[in-house]
Image (cartoon, rainbow, N blue to C red; front, top):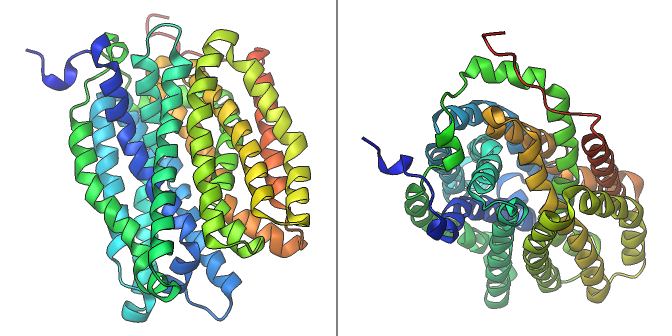
Length: 435
């Protein structure tokens, strides 16, 4: 007898399924963005030192530590999803993620409980990193498998588009808080308000996601690989996973640079007002949300590689010159213009790339392979972006140094696109037992 979670997805439920599956993405990115935006307040609450630079570096190091757990989460939770099912796995990841959000909201500061405060914050980031290691992969694979024929690019683009809703919501909350509270009140307790709101949203998202149905493509598989078989398949396809990681470096570096790091860059480096930085970030979120599904749909019509090659190539050649122009005479107008251009490059590339990665990974290890490639890119490059660019600016004395980091990401994307669509790197399948 069939159970509710094994019922196949029907055409009339497509829209509802997109909302249900991407709701967890909203919570993940809402929390990650808040950590980046309130980094200066978090650094004073949990990592107080005599140096503002040192406190900020400790904060971003803790932020980056969570990303180091992502590859582990990708393998452990990814294999669980590929073996047990998309729906059950996505409910599990949300549960783990929620615990990290709660710790960030309610842990007292260093002044109250000493070293236990930064330790608990670190634990929260590690838990979120572990769950996030498969969250994006699980969501992307679910969307690709439920998509109508010829529309995978459009459907998978909503994985990233849902994150932009979180950025817009977080930026609006930040704007209201900064408009109605004093700086002293925000530094004391006001910065925690958005985290409290996140905790209140989690039960709603959990209820929504529990109603997910399993995908037809997963149900159509007669057998599902064991963990050992999946590890063997990953080893066999290590070149493909590594190339997939290079594809995602462009996505994750540019995303964290133009969203999570932007408020800190505007306030601490360009010396613009908090409200100016928030408004730019809000506009970036809206821009990303508009471009992502458009280019996802366009990639269904013209192909993935023309869009991916063009966007990554333009990132390589324009990132540093534009940031140099911005820092030469910082202003709200210049920052908005530069960030919107970088937003266009990120969204056009990402709109095509998520679908591309789901297509090149073999079905039986699709969630694990996708998640491992994505988490490696995020752990080694994207998640470290705030830390790396803060260090680059301090070390080189060049305020436009983040352009080097983003230009490097563009080069990775261009090389990986060429390797995959020239057929230099392809998927390999395990020989059957009959062979």
